[in-house]
Image 1 (cartoon, helix red, strand yellow):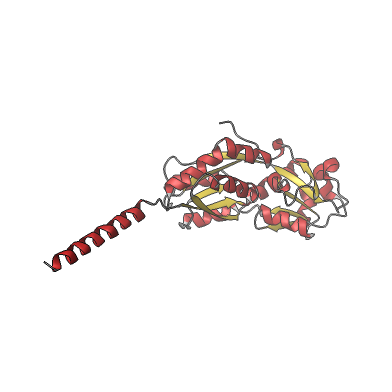
Image 2 (cartoon, rainbow, N blue to C red):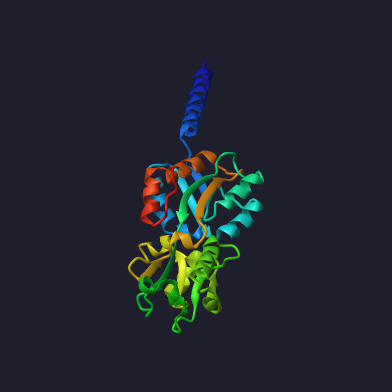
Amino acid sequence: MTGRPFVWALLCAGAALAACDATVERVPARGRVRVAAAADLNAALGELIARFGASHDVDVSVSYGSSGTFYAQLLNHAPFDLFFSADLEYPKQLASRGLTMPGTEFTYAVGRLVLWAPLSSSLDPEQQGLRALLAPSVAHVAIANPEHAPYGRAAVAAMQAAGVYDGARPKLVLGENVAQAMQFVQSGAADAGIVALSLALAPSVKGQGRRFEIPLSMYPRMEQGGTILRWAVDPAAARLLREFVLGADGRAILERYGFFLPET
C-alpha cells in the first residue's frame, strides 16, 4: 500500500510534463524569410520590412546586390527564399528552369534613372541634363556595371539616346551595383552618377545633391519583379512578405521612393 501513492505521484508528474510539452508545441514559431534584393531597393525595402514586421511575426534578413549576380548565384541554389530583381527577366528565367515555386513570379515596380551630382559640384543636372557629362570639369561618371546590373545597362542606353555616350565613355567608373555607383559619387570618387531615383530619394541622401530625372522614353523599361525560390525554408512567410509589398501599404512606400508603379 505504501508504494501506491508513489506510483500515483509519478503518473501525475508524467501527465504534467506531457501537458507542458503540448503547451510548448502549441506556441507558434516565428517565420523566417531570407531575401536577395536589387541594390536600388536599399532604402525602400528597409522601410517596407519595418512596416511589415510591425504586423507580422516574421524575421526578415536581406542581402543587397546586383540582380545579375544574384541570378548567377540562384542558379546554384544560393540560400535565399525570396528574390527581388531589378529586371523581371531574371525571375522568369529562374522559373523556366524549374527553380521557383510555381506561380509565385510577380512585378512590383518600374525602375527610374536619374543623373545625380552633389551640391558641392559645379554641375547643374537639372538645367544641363545628360549633356552635363561632357563638361571638362567632369573626370569620372559612376554607373552600375552594365555586364550584370540592369541599371548599368539602362544608363548606357540613356547616354546613347542623348548622344553623349562616346564622350562620356572614357570617364565611366563602374560600381558592382547601382548602390555602389551612388557611393562613388557621394564619396567624391566620381563627379556625377547615373543612378536609381529610389537611392536619390533615400533619407540619407535626399537634399545632398541635384538631380535630373531621365525620361522613361530614353532607356528600356525596367520592369522589376521577383519570385519565391523552390527551396524556400518557409514558403508561407515568403508569401506574406510578397503580398505585403504588392498591397496598398507596400505600394505607397515604393511610390514615395520614386518607383513607377505598374497597373494592378
